[in-house]
Image (cartoon, rainbow, N blue to C red):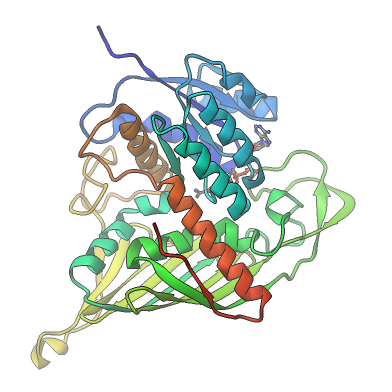
Length: 399
Ligand SMILES: NC(=O)c1ccc[n+]([C@@H]2O[C@H](COP(=O)([O-])OP(=O)(O)OC[C@H]3O[C@@H](n4cnc5c(N)ncnc54)[C@H](O)[C@@H]3O)[C@@H](O)[C@H]2O)c1
């Protein structure tokens, strides 16, 4: 008898929701051993047309507008929650109570309080798998640098990271959920959440944050005539609403290892569409990566002697099957064959489904809800530092 298929559904079919829909499509084609059969059951979105379009494009059997219908759907076992952050808690708690495995997008919630409640809800259901969508942990080059830091670069002195985007730079980018919520829920929560997670992923836990500063340049935005998705433009009304959160956030950090961190986050950086990048400096060398050139990274190993110092410098490394995720992770896994963010959602979906299916020894597990809370703990501390003129805020140990 063939095993029962794992039934998959996605709530929210906007910018990132479609990446989840596609991720569950590609997941069974990647890596070994084969996954149990998947049943692509449903896409749910508040906009019926958007849900139906995504279901058709990505081959899901049905679509709907009410996520509550999934609670009683016996053919749905795994659900991705890919809607505005302020909606995560209610939906995730209901899904867990209904016995569904939940992969929730980052940041885990809009506030630390809500994220903590979600961890409690998950703890009440240890039989269910939960995860937070820190998809950039799946970047092969980032995972390779993490290994280099652990094994070759020696004690790290400095992590310098930035996540610069320009999606909010135009005053004609319409009002949307991303611009609502208090200080810290803007660029810091939206894209800084990824950078903070990567910093600890590569360098280990932070101990404190300080020197935080926020600014908001565009203080009002026009309300759109219809629904908006992602960072898309739309036809605008004459009505303007106040932007409630940060366009730019900067801060510094101390890591438990003794390293320091410098962080720069902006959603109004002209010329930087989606520019996540970092440098890490260790005692024996350095490494750097920039998502503008995702399939390569640079590494420097200190010269062993004066003769080799004459040719010392960063090596450009083209990511290939010798690095994490690539062997079996793209259809043509040959050196120099590149990959994109869409592939990472396939790796993430595959990892989550391995956890659900109980496959051991495969991909690293998806970031946990605890990792999601950790991220929001740091975001909350950065926000408190900014509110108090940049004071130092000590972080709890990462459990
Ligand atoms: N991991 C990543 O790289 C990444 C990238 C972008 C967004 N995200 C995260 O994904 C989530 C969604 O962001 P987005 O940019 O896709 O947003 P979006 O605005 O593009 O899409 C949100 C979708 O949710 C739908 N929706 C709203 N209320 C709903 C409800 N009650 N029930 C069902 N659907 C509803 C909207 O119609 C819309 O289609 C956020 O948590 C965001 O932080 C993650």
